[in-house]
Length: 85
Picture 1 (cartoon, one colour):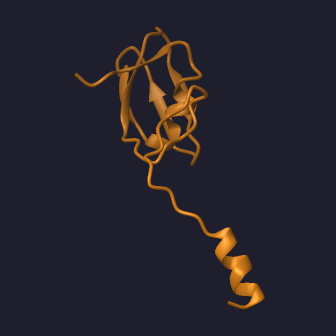
Picture 2 (cartoon, rainbow, N blue to C red):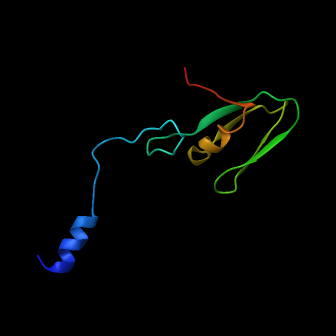
C-alpha cells in the first residue's frame, strides 16, 4: 500500500454499536420524532435547528417534533416530552 492509501485507511472508521442519547441530550442515530406537550397558558414559539418554528399554545399544546429538534425542546421547562406507552 502506498503512503496516501495508508493515511486514507487510518482515517476511515466504522462502528458496530448503536449510538444512544447521552445525558447532555446530543442527537443520536436512532431517534424518531417525539411529541412535546406545552404546559403554559400563553403562546410559545420555538425555532428548531433547521428553522422549523413550533407554535405551542393552550389550544394546541401537543406537537410532533423533528428528531434534530428534541434537544432544543428539552431546554424549555414548560415543554414536557410525551413518552410512548
